Length: 77
Image (cartoon, rainbow, N blue to C red; front, side, top):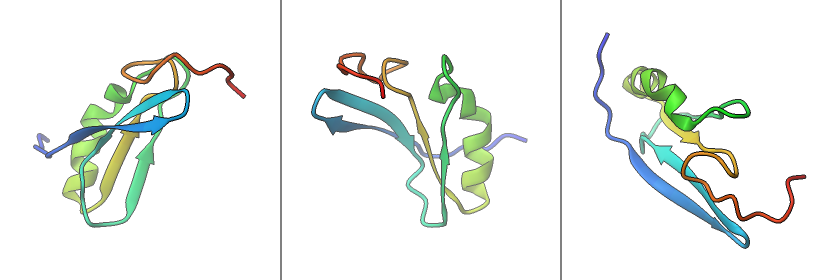
């Protein structure tokens, strides 16, 4: 199954850096997909489209220090 979904990459600005996330900008219930340590939001590229096609708003994030998220945070607690 192939699905094409419009996805926008955004950045959440925080005091010590920014967190990168992709948003399908859907109008349905929000589904947040968070990768495990060491993985990136791109892990969900084959899942986000089908979920969005079912009517969900899908957001995928890169954890601090991974992918396009900044590694400038002083603490990880």
